[in-house]
Length: 177
Image (cartoon, rainbow, N blue to C red):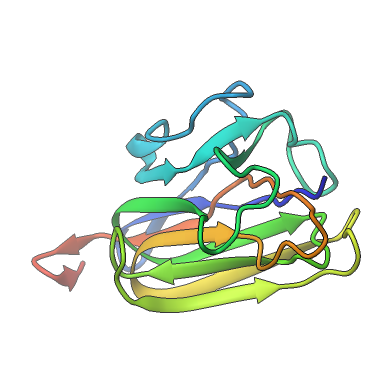
């Protein structure tokens, strides 16, 4: 089964020149846990994500990663995993492991649900993608949510995600500080 690792680092910008890096690697949660608001203290809540014991693939960390809670074998753009941020973010990076012909996509939106697509990044590997990994980045002002999934289900491969990376901008009265 193909696995994807999602890199989500939370950079809280207290001023435009001062940032703190926080890494969420899901390794502090046991396998089979609904992720949900487990990382809300770090500024992100996950929708349709559950931990799995698939974090040991090449390019990943061990022991856990996350998968889609209901369609773990191949989440599609019509039913993605979501990461919703407590405050606006400006960039997100994603590393996919075992990326094959079904690829994966990272899409950024300006609202908690619905909203406008701000930017997206996608990649296809070859075949079943065993051992292939790639990093995607999306950057835009005002990202409130990202969605991630496979692009197709042609090969019937699965995906897991890990490590999320985000740059957050602290806002006060609508102005960056």
